[in-house]
Amino acid sequence: MRETFSLIRREFTAYFLSPIAYVVLLFFLAITGYLFFLTVNGLTQSGPRGIEFPFEILLGSPYFWVVFVCVAPALTMRLFAEERATGTLEVLMTSPIRDWQVVLAKFIACFFFYLLLWLPTLAYLPVLLDLHVTWDLSAWSASAIVCVAGLAAIVVGLFGLIFGMNGMLGFFLMLAGAVAAGLGGWAQHTRDGAHLIQVNAGIYAWPVVTSYIGVILAGAMFLSLGLFVSSLVRSQLVAFLIALLVSLLFVVAGFWQPDLDTGGLPYRILYFVSVPLHFSHDFTRGVLDSRHIVLYVSATFLFLFLTVRSLESRRWK
Image (cartoon, rainbow, N blue to C red; front, side, top):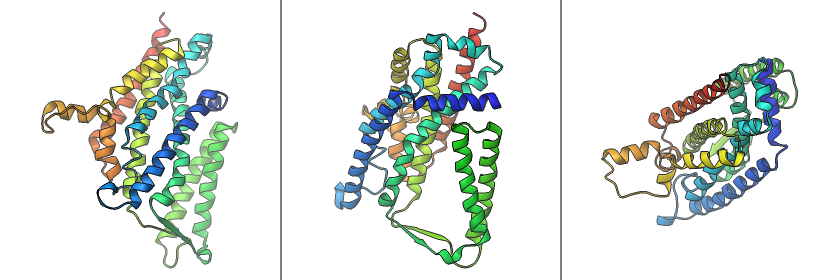
């Protein structure tokens, strides 16, 4: 496990040494910021020009999906292609670490960076949900202190894993922090009396939760696809273009929607694989459809499995 944590830390910190990662981050935030502006305008307008759900414009816009299908190939194109081009993949394959650990470590590293892209969008939520937060400092209790300490341990453990802490120690801190935060938060929430923090939303918040669940699961699928393509080729540019073309198969219906019978088999197949339709019809409206979740999770494991097999095939050459 120590070797796996070391590889995760190496791959994650490598993103901050590459200008491509900063370009992807700035471009992604620029597009989501513009769509956030349009969303706020839609929420404040009434009549047929207004919108009902907070992420209806942001995750239902074709502009967003143009950026989205470019993000995963840009983040994954170097993970194996660069190793093959520089000859370091052979060194990595002969190290005391298994193929599935190499694939898992690279996937987790790029997945963490993908989550980092979405982290600034949390700043939009107070406006989108019309949040009102009230504090009651007199409600401090032992359970509240345990909850806050647990959250702090999670943050320390996460940053420790990324920036050089012993892997097992960082994992233990995150696990212990999660347990402490959960138990402390549950005790604080269920106890009689006032709560330390009271959050009230003027807009129904569940569609936002389902939207974030959707982008996390869909992102994992596209990242695993890009990782698999990167393991097949030597050129980063070729890896980017192939992953982009394959990813377009999952979003083409967001731009091209043929006139099909909604009850027919062709439309059901198109709807099953079209990620933008999943968001515009379900995720952004607070619906968690098990068919979408099964597609994202099964495709993620399939592409990761194929990536492991791709690496294993190199040992027989």
